[in-house]
Length: 362
Image (tube, rainbow, N blue to C red):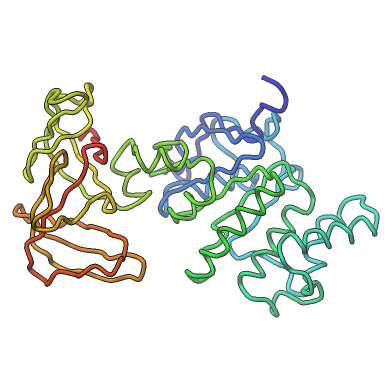
């Protein structure tokens, strides 16, 4: 392995206890140079404690944290070459935009004209030209977020840590700034770790997602793999919506497909030899379900039938809730395309492909 191939951040079986409570339990992962990784989890999952240990604010009880190959044991926060963007931005209210961005640079031996040039370049990068003389109170939430980001990357850190960077913004602005943030991280080739509870934020910003639950690392991989092949029900529920069926997986039925037998019917699903004959759960994402017209054929797909409980038009999507004969309710999400929405209590036929089924051990 060359120096360029070595991970910028590496956690080796890191653990942390608080008064007997295991907040982080034997967590290991690494972040490559120029890569963005997201720690995704609900409140109490251990993701923020993990970030605080990487930053040096909390000392791990076990394991090792390495930044650029250097063991961080005993290394104080200001001695680590990291940038940190806080959830509330933590800008200096008495300083201007330019002064906030230049703050870290002025703590280091940089020439005055070099600092000015660097601040100017960063203001262009985060689209704050003309705002250099304003103070944080005169900025919008999105502009404050960009100042905090520019300040963090100004000193060229080995690693950038972002703690729920967009959570303080309203939904529309948060969506807009996701794309800006991703572009800035790509342009600066900044190695980044983002802590978030927002699944869309994790999937849209990160090259790799680390899913945490109750202090443990449940699954790590590209967003597409985590979403398409979740390793457990906790992972599937954390990164997207899902419909669940309980049943038993049979043997090979046709080609690479097996039969899943449950209370709501028999479905063809991808065969999993390790689960054959076992009680399993079947996960089908709402957007993989299709509402069939009364005269529409259903060859090669799984079928369900239920009654429409509710339908909601949400602009780009229509959400349907249907109740099956077993009493189970399912969510179906279709793109809005001026389709007629059935009346409540209508009988609805739903189809889904075997390839869109994910079988998970009970």
